[in-house]
Every structure is written in structure tokens, then in C-alpha cells.
Amino acid sequence: MITSPSTRYQGSKQKIVKWIWENIRDLKFKTFLDAFSGTGTVGYYAKLHKKEVTVNDILNTNLIIGQSIIENSKERLSQKDVNFILEEHSNIKYPSFIQDTFKAIYYNDEENHWLDVVITNINQIKNKYKRAIALNALFQSCIVKRPFNLFHRKNLYVRFASVKRSFGNKKTWDTPFPEHFKKFVREINNCIFDNGKNNKAINFDAFDIPNPNDYDLVYIDTPYFSTHSMVGVDYRDFYHFLEGLVNYDDWKNMIDWKSKHLRLRKVPCVWTNKNEIHNAFDNLFKKFQKSILVVSYRAGGIPNREEMVELLKKYKANVVVKSKKYKYVLSNNNGSSELLFIATD
Image 1 (spheres, rainbow, N blue to C red):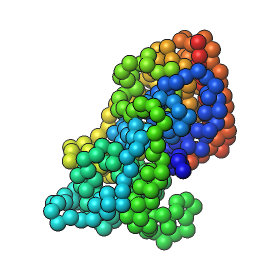
Image 2: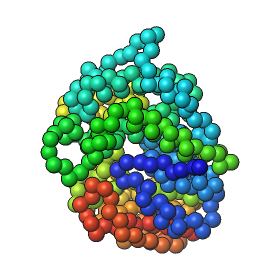
Image 3: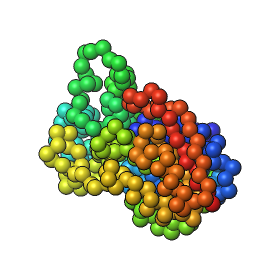
């Protein structure tokens, strides 16, 4: 039985993907681009509905997730593969970069050692899709053992403090990494299927995606910029540790060593800049103007609802806005709504 992948990713559309699909399923499209795919929830749903899907994300972690469950149509990790990943092998010299660098920041010493071993073993796997499944399972394992499911601050102490908790799941935090890993491998293996289409995962800045006219429908779910914030949501900052795992051999050269939690060095992003975000949407809509445009955004964001409609109408004749009451995890706004802009010729 095929099951949709679970995710703990900030801003995930997992709980509302059916609502999104109900609003677009009758549109005429065969090829589907998820331009900011994240963990691929919407792209995967399109794959389930026999569309030819391309998922794109600028983060390497999300490229790998897309490779594992969307581009991949048949490869799975076997028990032998899992055993190889979880064992220390006498013929492999294991680095200790995570254990030496991230002591008492995100995980304890034993867990850091485990991560050094497992990422080294995963990097021995030659098959692209098996390696992607293993990395995806490792990402999910790392996320569930983190307070708030993020890497935004040095707060390992939260896991071990003897206090009354209003958030989190201490049982999950205390579950050993290997148990999480095996669970997520099973889950991801169950997500893999062939829908008969040539599905792809790509890794571009959305403005640089090649062949923009190849897609009948382009789904756009950019980082959210609240009117109450000075900066937008920076996913690279939230999940920098996972990006580091992907670039394990070069990780030390990517770190901002002045930061307490050893994040990656900042990369300029228009989606986190209040002064650039309107032009960013305009340029994106212009790039994909020959496609049906579907935009997910939250009420109370920049641009606002009226501005988004105005931007879309520069390139498309018809713009319909759907709204659904929805509160995201970690959001303080109980009255927030999810907006879906559907722009057609």
C-alpha cells in the first residue's frame, strides 16, 4: 500500500494538500512544477494523481528528498543496506567532525558519534536513489530529536531538563537514533511507486529553472513573510545542520564560526527581504506566465491578498482566490488563513 510521506518541516502543506488539490484538480494540466518544493508534499500528491512532476528546491536536502520519493520509481533500501549503514566497519576510517564540532549544541556525544558513522556509511552507497532514501531517513531522524524540529539555536539542554513541558515529545527525543532511522526507512520505502511518468527532482534558484514553458501548471509556495516580521522565513537557517550533512566533507568551510549554534554562512535571499519581495513575485510570475499559476500563501503576509492578485493580473486574465482557516505549528496566530491564488488565461 502506497502511503504519503510524513514531514515535520516548517510550513509544510501536508495537512492541507487535499484541499489544495480539490481546488486545482479540474484544471487542464499534465506537467506539474513545484517550484519551491520543500519536502515534496504537494509534488508527491501530484505524482499520486498521475501527473508528470518536477520538484525544485534551492536546498540540497530537499533535492535529495525529491530524488528519494518523486524521481525514484522503484529503488528501496533492503535490510542488508540498513544493516550496512548502521554498523561500524573495521575497513572504514570514520571522521569525527560532528562529534568534535557540535558538542552539546544539538545532540549528545554518543549521538554525534553515531551521526559521523552513519553519514560516512551512507556516502559509500553508489546507487543514487538508495543513497537519497538513506539521507532522507537521516534528515527525518535528526529533525524529530530536535526541540521545535529546528536547528535555529543551541538548546540541547531542553531535551534533558527536568521541567514541566508545554511542547515537544520527550519520548521521541529519548528514542535512539537507530530506531528512528529504521522507522523512517520503512516509511519512505512504502512511499515509492512508479506512476508511469518521467518525474524529476532539480536544484535551482526558482528564477533559474530552465525551460519554463515546459510546465502546464506551476505551483508556487515561497517562504512566508509576515507583516509583523522584519525578515522572512529562512529555511536554510532553520535546517542548516541537514545541509551540512549533505556536504559533509566540505561542511567546515561553510560554517559561520561566529554564531553560537554554528549555522551556515548567510546567503542573500530575496524572499527574506521586505524591500525585494514584491519584485521577486513579479519576476517569478513573468517567468512562468505561459503556465497556469497556483500560489499558496498565508493571509497577513507580504505581499497582501490584494497586491498578490494585482501582480498575477499583469500576466493572467483570471485570478481566483480560495481561503481556508488554518494554523501552522509554532504560529501564534489562531485566526490565520491559508490563501490559494489560481491564475489562468
